[in-house]
Length: 283
Image (cartoon, rainbow, N blue to C red):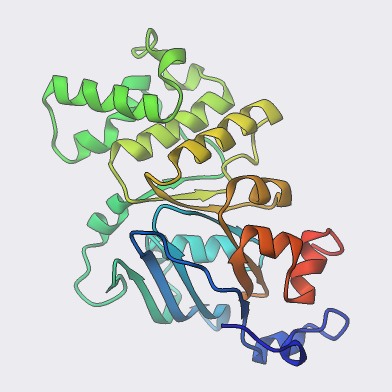
């Protein structure tokens, strides 16, 4: 959906008018396999406070999509809607539709556990379990009741290979995961998510606690995983969004302000608010 220049939000005007405007979106082309996630007129409240306002977007299968915007703009709230983690908050309510492969994940009767297996989650800080490297990686399989040793070993190696960690830990699989460096722990958490064979990887500021070298390794990993998985990453780093993503969504005050190809968002934004944010004028 494209808006005429007269409909674009004026960065110099009060922010309140954003509430009544439609988002500015470039066309986001689906992948050869189509769109995996479709969000339609999605609203979310915590009690009386509305956190998301009429969010609509389509996320192509196999792409990397970055969610950017200042703190408190709704990025992480939206991310947690994709695997229904917000269900854990009693005062949450919502309306609108959020579909995965054409099925509304908030309809009655949805198997939320099965949904979460399709949506691997990587958090802001590495969260390895206090167990061996091997047991961390194969934990999702054991939860599913898989006990055959050869199956678990194959899954562990495959996941660690995919997470670019196998060569570093293959001789330490019985060691505690807590002995790994921060960057290694985060890649271990990615391996654990991959071991469950998800379709989508949700990443909430996965590099915020890491040094530049570890961050570069995670970004290289995201590039390698692109195509195999659809990746949605929340990041405060404009440079990171520009480096790793295919499409970028800019959010502000719980609203999707602009969504399109990363190149267009950073080089030729349609909304003045988007331009001001990606160039560091506010946020």
